[in-house]
Image 1 (cartoon, one colour):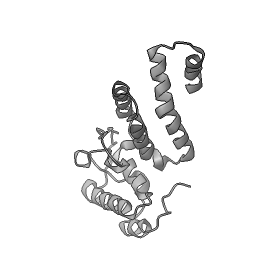
Image 2 (cartoon, rainbow, N blue to C red):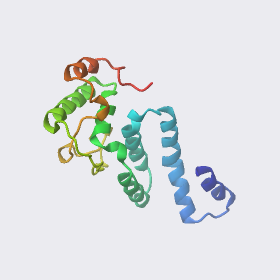
Image 3 (cartoon, rainbow, N blue to C red):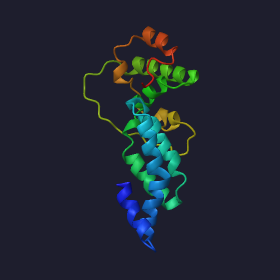
Image 4 (cartoon, rainbow, N blue to C red):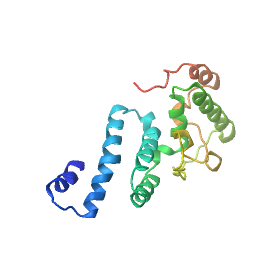
Length: 170
């Protein structure tokens, strides 16, 4: 897609403003995040990729940034609390892993075991953040444990959380 969009811009002496806008987006956001995703292909990194996309979109003009932010908000499935919590467990910072562990244990106590089907609701994003785990308003979200951790006991999670490589992507 990027190749087909950039070719007319390069071959045109005077490209339209729309073509210039698409080119700006491709160069400043699309290509860098594409390489980032190719380098970190693990599903645990999805929250980080959304954060990097938001971070890169800050380099766009204000009108383009608003358009991109709307699209990011609409498609931010990896920003669900369960996905952020799971990615936090893979973080290299010990205090981030500890924060994730505390939130997971709290979610286990408050939510209990549900039998009904949960609907995936994309939380409202906070676009003015400095790190990926601040992307959502935690006090406004229904926080549940990541389903992939359901078979781990609390004690097992505590022990494994001390090791930085257990959940780390390969």
